[in-house]
Length: 222
Image 1 (cartoon, one colour):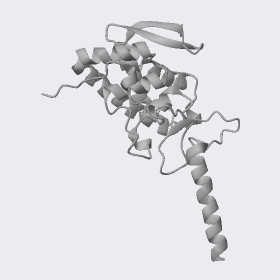
Image 2 (tube, one colour):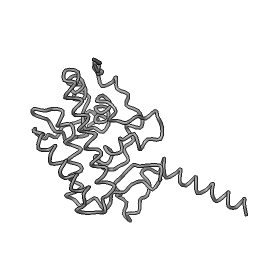
Image 3 (cartoon, helix red, strand yellow):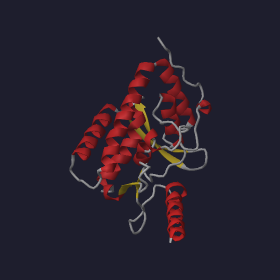
């Protein structure tokens, strides 16, 4: 039997640059973008590949502070079966939310129904209280302090973000990156609603460079 060993401290986690590149504009969309399928390098694994990387992503997204992240790793060491189940549930939720994001222009469709069902199912298992707490950088964060199943509470901030999108009718502004090789999704907060790229520093500039090369090619051929 193989025993999983989790880091004792959050500093032991490999919080890569890719973990900290949040371009979705909404927590639930960045959660979707943590999938390996959106990555362009084997050096940036799926954030839900293991429980410790899941906790690392939550910490990078400021869902967990260092103290709570470290506590979750210790709890996972004590309850590996529960941690594994929590990771499986996170992957399932992410798949459901991707369906919602990519079918955002179809109100009342199967993707929306599946998302609502999954959101309510997990919220039904999550008991606790919400707090506003100060961060070390002087800012503030809204947190959910779980009572009972601490693992179930990890997803509550992500779920609430998705629920807000439904309630506030934001789905028409949720788009997939125009780069066919990228599967990131994002909330278009631009005034004209015509944002095409998940990130200008990556996909946007690559598209611009590709267009430039094509122009040179056409000009040379002519």
